[in-house]
Amino acid sequence: MLSKQMQKKLSTIDRERLFLTWGIGLDSKNRSLQLAHRLWTRTDDIDHISESASIVAMLVGLVPAEEAPKEMFGLNFAPRGSGRRSNVFRKRVLSLL
Image (cartoon, rainbow, N blue to C red; front, top):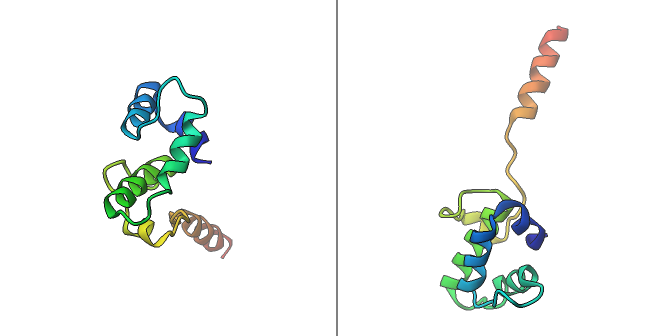
């Protein structure tokens, strides 16, 4: 999932910069899969975890790249509800009354 999101969310330049930052050669195969694997490898380093969480949050679309939510450290990957659905439902019910 993350490797597919990289294609959608990041430009070519951003992807290449991300690969180089994480030590993945630009001429290697399956770069996106390698990066997705490296995001989850070092669980003992808090800096690695926070950097991984910010990348995952950016790719999933939870927050901008700089703001990793606290829920990411608790592994809560479910997207937050917008509340819009309940407002639409409420308006429809009120229109029927």
